Structure formats: C-alpha cells, structure tokens
Amino acid sequence: MKLRELVAVERVVFLRSRDKREALAELVQAAARSGGPLDAEAVMAGLWQREAALSSRMSHRIAFPHLQIPSFGRTLVVIGRSRDGVDYDQGEDGRVVLICLILGDSLDPDGHVTLLADIAATLRDSDLVGRLLQADRPEEVYRLLAGPDPTPSRAGADRISARVLVHAGALAAEVEASTIILHVDEVSRPMVREFGAAVGFGAERRAILASSRPASEASLPAGFSDQVMIPFSVPSRSTQVEVAILLALSRGVIDHADRVVSVFGLPEAGVLDTVVVSDVGVEFETFASVGRQRLAEMAQRGVLERVLQIGRELATHGREGRPVGALFVVGDHERVLGHSSQLVMNPFRGYPGDERNLLDPALDETIKEYALMDGAFVVRRDGVVESAGTFLGAPASPAQTPGLGARHAAAAAITAATDALGIAISESSGETRIFKSGQLVLTIG
Image 1 (cartoon, rainbow, N blue to C red):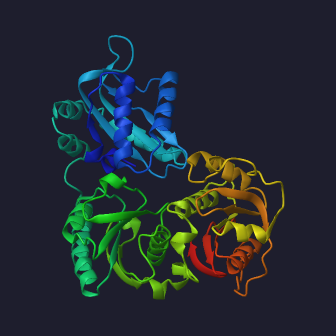
Image 2: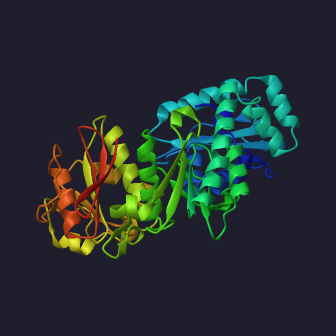
Image 3: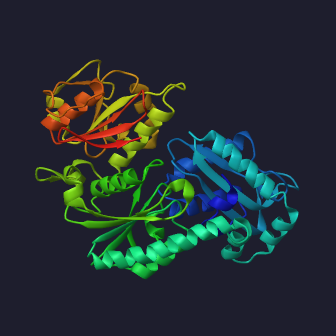
C-alpha cells in the first residue's frame, strides 16, 4: 500500500486554520465528503485522544495524524497544506506546514504500518517537500504525490479498459440495457470520470459504480446515478457479477425487469476486460423476488452489505486468530421468531433498537463475540438485531445441501418457511453462502 496509489485531488486541502484541532477537523471533513460514510465526530475524538498521548508531528514541518477504525473497510489519505503554518505542538519548532491524515481499518494493521512507512520515505525527499510547499493548487499537490505518468503496465491497462468501456456503452444502447454496472477499484481513476461523462444515460439508462472504496454521494462522478459497495475482494469473475447484482437489488437501484451490462476484470490485474449482459428476472429469478416481495423490501439499504462484511471478517480473522462460523437471518423477523426458540438467554433483549443496529460499526465486536455461541442471529430488515443464540426450528427444506452442515440446512429451512434471507458463514472453508426461498442462490469463496 503506497501513498501515490491513495492520494486523490479531492482530498487535498489548503488549510485555513492555524489551530491544530480546527486544522484536523478540516481534514476529517474532507475525508467525510469524498471517502464514503464516516462518523466525523468519532474520528475527531479518536485522533485527539491519540494526539494527547503522543503527538504525530514528525519534524518541524510535517505531521502524520493517523487512526485505525473498526470495520472501516478502506484506507483514506487526506493531504493538508498550510501557507502560514499550523501551531501543532508547543515550542518554537512546533509549527507544521504539511499534514498527512491517514484513516485505515483496524483489521489491516500491516497495511497501515506499510503505508506510514511509505509516506515517511516519500516525505524524506526535501526537494519534493519544497515543491509541495510552493504548489498553489490542489491539482499540483496531487500530481507531485501521485508521481510521474503511470507505469507502462498501468498505462496499457488503462488503454484497454478505456476501449472496453467505449464498446460497453455502445452495447448497452444496442441491446436496450437499462443499466451499466462498472466494477472499479478506484472511483477517482480518470477513465471512470470520462466514462460517466460520456455515457450520461439519465432517466432512460443509468450507470452504477460497484467498488470496495466508495465515493460519497456528493462526489459520485458525473453520469453515475448510484453506487454499490462491495464489502470485500471477489476474485471470481462470475461471482463479481452475482454479488454486484444481488447488492444492487437489495439497495433498490435495479429491479427484476432490468437488463444489466456489467463491466469488470480481475482485481489484481487492474484492467477492465470483460463485459456481461444479464437479464435480472431470468438469470437471477430467486434473487429478484420471493413471491410478490422484492429483495429491496426484505433488507433496507446497506444492511446486506454489512452482514456480508461482518461475515467475511469472521471467516478470515475470527476471534483470537481462529475462524468463526455464523448464521444471519435477515428480514421477516416476526415469522422467523415464530419458528425459533432460544438456546441461551437472548443477549440483545431489552436494549433500544439504536443500540443493537448492525449498521453501527460500534456493534461489530459485540456481534463477533456472540458469534462464538451456537445458534443464529435474527436481524430485522432495518438492521436491528432481534436475537442471538437462536435455534431455528422451521421444517426441513426440500432443497438439498449436500456436503454442508447443520447451519446451512437451517438457513435453507428458515428461508423456505419465511420471506427471510439466510447468510451462512462456514467455519471450515470460510465461504459465505446465501439462501433464499429454501435455495442456495450464491456462494462467495
């Protein structure tokens, strides 16, 4: 993880304040505007607590304030440049003119340390620092930190991707697709913005971004109407399409009647090289509806992404270094509870809804701790956790789950008896399986 890969022109700030706390607040607000959902008050509190313990000033000119946030799911870098200097610490040498704010995920400490080391090495170049301090526009600061023109391999990948995007736009019009879903690693890449501006579907057709590093709603590139956050890396080409369409359905940004053109490639290659046309109601019939109920009616916007993200973290990091399996049942909670009983006392009983909503990252550690218990989590469509340690007693589903255990059989059974979604995380393989209408509809490896 390197600075030049994370710097973005919209996160370069020419600071107005000379006060340390106010300058940090300017940087946090820039992160909130352009880097996806962010609790600015909590971030400021965390940064200020760290600064009280140990100042992040690295020299008389430069500071690296940084914070690791639970389940943040991304890394953001915000560059602050001050013409007059910020009074960062007491003393004659306590003023800084360049502040590099780093926000990362607490589950990626190695990446965080690697990035800090790269930033320190980059800013040891006194000539570069001098040019940064002479820059008078954010675009110039970005150019200096992003480095020279892309390497031949990246430039070649971008040329291929740009041509694929041109043909994808033409294909979408030719087959009368209602939607293009563009899978990208960085929404700030120039080709993304150029594509959005060129396509500009508007009311007749729409373009949607699918990325693990979302933009804020206010900073979506022109021409894109919405975005889908993919909460983890999806290596398989076919699964990329399935996950994006599933999440787009759950967010209500597409419907069963839509024809979708997906543009994507293998994440590690960094090139868009594949175009797939999908009729949602035909190819994803089980995704699209349960009887008359749409997927978007079963789980509110963002709930399914959070369940998948928490599940992946349990499968990969678990507790105390050991993978943990789990089962989440989302939606139709009253009928689900009617088929259920408690294996243990329900640890969520009696708490206000806003204190047990899994959309709040503060609940992550609680969820992961209770995942060690036998039984399922029952989650309302709005993300409120109704119970944990729950035995699902629905009649066995006619669908077969060969080679899978009791957790998956329970997911199939409860979704056959109700209009809920079942998300089962395997402790042994780390795979996530999604059940709907008693059927296994998607496996994410």
